[in-house]
Amino acid sequence: MRLVSPTIVRLGVKSIFGRWRGVLLFVLPLVLVGLAVLARALVGQSEEGSQHTLYGLGLVVVVPLVALLATSGLLAPEIDDGSISYLLAKPVPRSTIVLSKLVVAVACVLAFASVPMLLAGLVLRTDDPSVAVGFALGSVLGGTAYCALFALLSVVTRHAVVVGLVYLLVWEGLLGGLLDGVRWLSITRWSAEVADRVAGLTLVAQLPLTYALAAGVVVIVGGTWLTGRRLRAFNLTGDE
Amino acid sequence: MTEIRIDHVSRWFRNVVAVNDVSMTIGPGVTGLLGPNGAGKSTLIALMSGFLAPSAGTVTLDGEPLWRNEQVYRRVGLVPEREALFDYLTGREFVVANAELHGLPDPGAAAERAIALIEMSDAQDREISTYSKGMRQRIKMASALVHDPPVLLLDEPFNGMDPRQRIHLMELIRTMGAEGRTVLFSSHILEEVEQVARQIEVVVAGRHAASGDFGAIRRLMTDRPNRFVLRTADDRKMASVLMADPSVRGARLRAEGGIELEASDFGRFSEVLPRLAREHGVRLHEVTPTDESLESVFSYLVSS
Image (tube, rainbow over all chains, first blue to last red; front, side):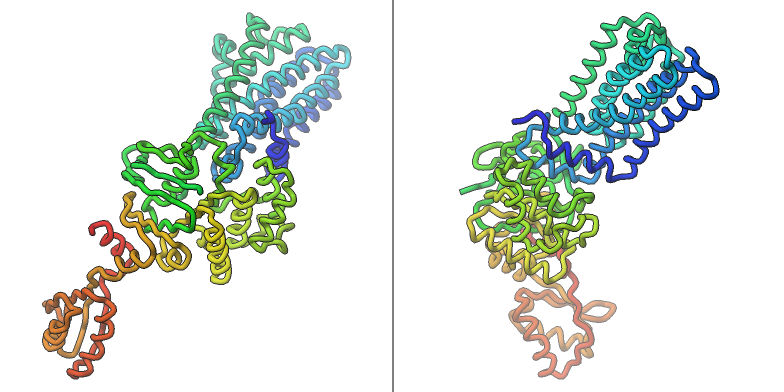
């Protein structure tokens, strides 16, 4: 059996761009690149300014939101309205269903978060392309990990989008800014560490790159596996 | 020969028991799962289609467990009750996708065959979001039939269908059963079930209340004592006249006027009542059955 089902990928792409969420996916990167162009035109090249845009807006806001929109748009509505039963009532391994959905979600992250990050970085820092590359690579790690996490949320709770947003605001945003120790358990900070190392910045202090990478992989593999497991024991009941 | 066996199955959700120690075997031919709303029909179908684990007991398809066993879907076609479909696809795209997911060698041809079978060829290139309730039901049916499964499970398939579509679907279900498939459908309407099903299983409040061919179930349902309230020009006379007839088991004059009557043989009673009234010159003002609701029929079955 194939690991990824082309049929589920095709259905996934259609479902994302067949809903209003699809429009939001275009808006977020446009804002990021637009702001980068504006900053460059008004302020010129500045190390601090580019970091504010690429980190504060890019890694902290755009990457997780694109991952949340893409992943929850792929799983949560189908679980909510029960149409996932048409995928589940098939002799297809549950891991294949999850992997196929994640392929679409990660492709969205690449197209609507990582590529715009690269563009925004290149616009902001023509003198140092390593900044753009660093942030783009960081967004790949962070975005993929967020997709796996939000996929798991989608099969665990019916309020995946709300729980995901609260997690982003409270844990990654509020507590991450206040408490230093959160960096050990923060996907955004792991992705920032990748940007740090590639571009020679210090967005996050005292976080080994190997730890950041390993933690990201644990979330990606663990989230995918747990999602598949959960889907295998999926309870579908009627309206009774 | 394909057989679904439910063996001493119970299913509870926290402290609510949805299915209570049910045992039944669904074999080839059409079986109707009859019961009032909330009786546990959908829970039973979810158990039989591997979408719910039994809290106790076992559910098997030819000896294989259905829970956590996605390979059984090669042999099972499921038509869920819920309306939701992939609305952004056309009917044809939807059925083709189902065929692909089954790994069929020629998904296009399989989809075409299934769509022709349920007579949706004309509307197959329209988006599902434009479909009526009956069309949705039929395209769901096509998706369940696309891999030609020996087992077909349908949850309330006649809901929302107009009479013509209903007759067509009944015809289709009968054909499926005659071909030797194991077909099970649920319904809360006796007339619907007895027109299609050879075998009827009745569930009430999570319990298996009765089982048999439609003749046996029909007899169980019509032979039960029927209660009526009569209002006549002369209650006392009418009551004594009716008591003399064997179809009546008891009569009581109500303080507020009228007769409370229990008939044991509904067929005879309905024939005798107007005749006796005319012969004795008593005018009938009102004849009201007091327990005709389906729920009372079902509760009678449970208590017997």
